[in-house]
Image (cartoon, rainbow, N blue to C red; front, side, top):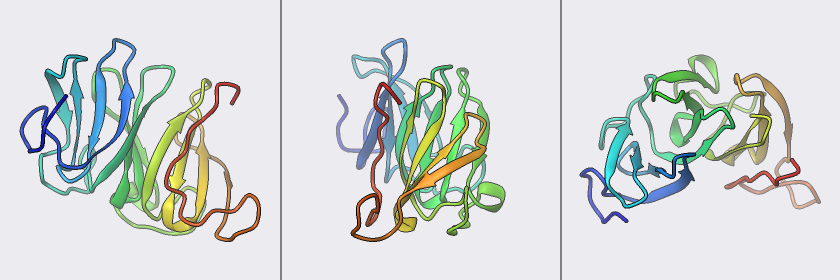
Length: 173
């Protein structure tokens, strides 16, 4: 599926992939500054973001790195260098975004802020887990983006990270 390029169904450094309940593929297209939705056969459905245009406004991206679905069908996008997560409802409309003030590419070490979002995963309750690369941690949020907890820190001791790049949630949470 796909080939190198910037047209519909083409990619420039594809990243995270999520499979929708209907079998469609959602793919973070890193250098093309977008997320594409394709049918299982590779045919183009739609995209979020403007191809090859970095943006900080809602629905725009600055190197998206990963995608994940919540149990209610919400699509969560790790908007890498905008230091935020954006969430889109089933019809593709932006439902919320979070990370730093205004969720617009302002990074920091505080709870709910990020310093490059590299991965996103969602548990069966809709809680969102986010790999926070330069803060060397994973943060956990409720489905509405409310900060719940964090774990990890920079270091070599057990339970610490040196640049958290990915996150996944096991079936038992």
